[in-house]
Length: 320
Image 1: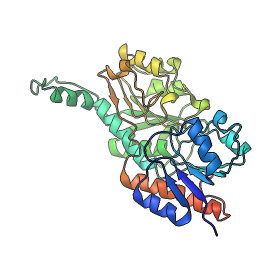
Image 2 (image 1 turned 180 degrees about the vertical axis):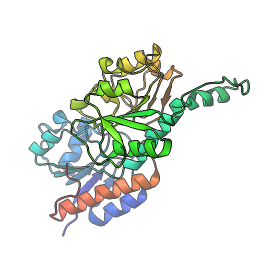
Image 3 (image 1 turned 30 degrees about the horizontal axis):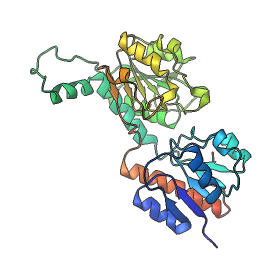
């Protein structure tokens, strides 16, 4: 059987490329530039499948009016797929898959990293040392929050939210409260589901945001929601940048309505507002959520398995 033509939109770990070449005729993008609408349309017309990822423009406008569409599968690299208009894709006969599961622990680890860094002012402290401005230890130097025994609030108790909660509860003895649109049971830890995001904000020392991206959740953490937070609390975001109203967050950090924040994602990536960069009470990471070689390899192999299954006439294991 003739192998399908596959376009991989970014360079991926070599084991992933090798696995893909066993099942498809593969073309790999030469660099890490995201697919523009025009480039995406060319690929949709030329290839049987595309392995896209975050930032590639596969929205409704891109998918509209394709001249000679050949593509049948968008095998997304990543659990989040808000860069793909799934409804528009389905209308054009495109199957969409993603790579859940592989990202869970790695993303939860980054959330805990941000929690500890923000609570203990680690980023601020490193900048002090690197600038050669540290005058030496003293008893009141850079006092932060001791997270053990505090309350963690989780917004979105899916796979990643649960992984964050388990780490916080078992690792630091934290109490857990959470908001989720549906009722969640059998978490394996003692946790209380609250009726609103605002209630979680009001009762938490640390808030971890773990909801999917997309229009439904844009600015879910709004100015009004942020106003419910304790002035001593810390907000962590490893979800998608536009889940939080970034301008409102900056205001809350400037006015000390929030004690701090830890961010791995931004509303208009890769742009990070100068106002955010200038603040000392926020930790800023460059979207490191799944940046571990074995994790990225597992994600890629999961995407390849979705491709193999699809072109073998099977239902892909991670169909969206």
